[in-house]
Length: 116
Image (spheres, rainbow, N blue to C red):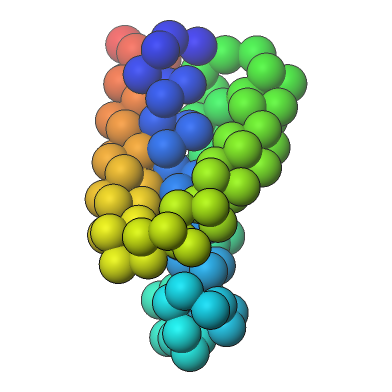
């Protein structure tokens, strides 16, 4: 996998983690949100990450990266939430959406190369 795919897969974890944190009661972010969008975003994030990992290189490497990113970035997100809750939420969402966009671009490029 190229560097963009690795980075995108890792950053997309922040969107799933932030969505999960917003849908559960946290001290830093307060009461949980119960929107359907939040509940749909978590599996969508995992699915997009897995598809990107599967199509762009050795799938075992990609799946390992997904698990490591969720664990490492999850720990970092918890630490940041306790220090700077509002900024953490904003930046985690921005970086997560950036990662999802990178996954989508990587998938589109991979699929169009396979068609030609």
